[in-house]
Length: 292
Image (cartoon, rainbow, N blue to C red):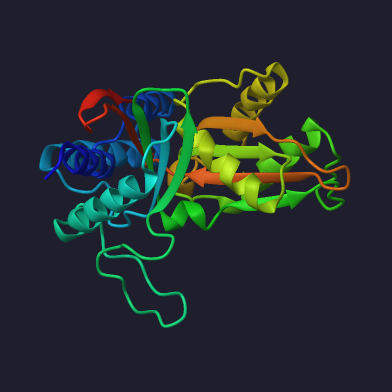
């Protein structure tokens, strides 16, 4: 097995079994903010116990190991076809060894792809640039969170949401209210303002590469993120929809250019099992540094 395959496999195993430190710390802060012996506190204690057991026993955090989304930033001229083939190989191996569930189906027949390797599975994004290392990030997105994603077109008369960041805020809060506990909260929302229908969802998911608590460098968007977090506490949805203050761990908002006649607001959810890891790999596939 090459260094590439060894370390890409290790990335999958870590992502599946070991919750990142920034996410776990956010869950512990949420627990401290809930009333003792409340349903919310019980839910968070149970979640944190599951995090500990998964790490100790080297087993998946959740039986739904979700959609695997790889983000690669590579040097100019790098052989991305070979990297894609290696990625598919290690996904198949991780599936055989139980770090990934066999959960990829043919959309027409319903037949399973037992290795989780199929058209668009795993999902891989490649970007070339002036760099020496390969930056790889992996997000494992469960069906529970994916099913709650929503896209709005402003203005929206029903929400009384106009084409402004105030209107965007109304859309985000509506998405939170509709999701209730079905997105396995408390988690993080990724939001894209603008773009088209496809790029809006892609950009909203890209926000999961940010650390929990990081703010947008755009001041207006950072203020919106802070406001959404404050508003979410007042909704009373709480962990797993059981009530409480901890409805969100983080809000990450970004923006893309748009057409004059289009104003999309896209909201994606990531539950408490915020499975996201990364690594910087050298020319031979060795690990320069683990990320997160």
